[in-house]
Length: 278
Image (cartoon, rainbow, N blue to C red; front, side, top):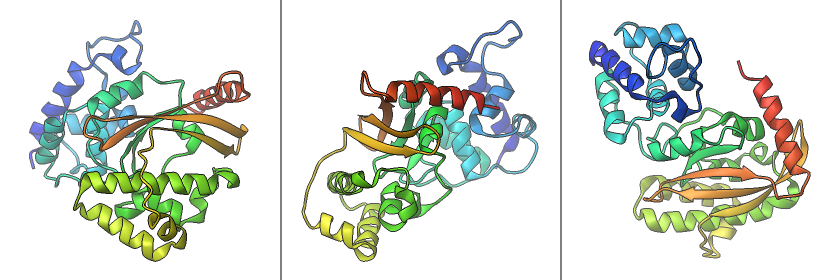
């Protein structure tokens, strides 16, 4: 562990970023070419004082979750992310978990969708990062590790995970999840996370076991979702998916069908989300 070296590395990565590329404005008070410390802290979900201590090589060893958040806030490449973990004296996180490295190109696209609900997930439906509009629409994912971090696992084992979806949509969504998972399982081959997930779900969910036995295969690239939002009411949205080159991550974004009430509902949600910002 070398916190002094880590602090210098964090500062160098902060200095190279262009605020405009991240949707930040160059106001008259900006004195630095890159991001300010407070901006990185906000993007990483940390306090400004805590992040300042990290750059100064002081304070406690950052957690794996904080390192993952910093890597995403600073748009680090995979090699840079790994370097950050080495300097912090932390083991590299598993690729299938919520702290997995996010492709910088997908982060760039996510930053360009501030008024559109969007999130980056793994191919096993683990939420890696999402924007404020996605949080306003879907809520923040509950903290979880291992299989419990996968929304597929939550969907078939926790009835509360389905509350946002209209009851008429449940069977369709279950079928989509299982067909997509079978495609992912074939691509991943002898992946332990996938084998554990399918084994546990087969034993814990009769619905999953029945659908899995059908052998249906279909990668989820687009879908229509009918949601029951606590503030804006029932809303129907198109859900589009952009897959990374290796297929391990997906950028999801939600758009209203043209000419429907969902257009105004999302505009209202954007206002609500903006007013809720700190």
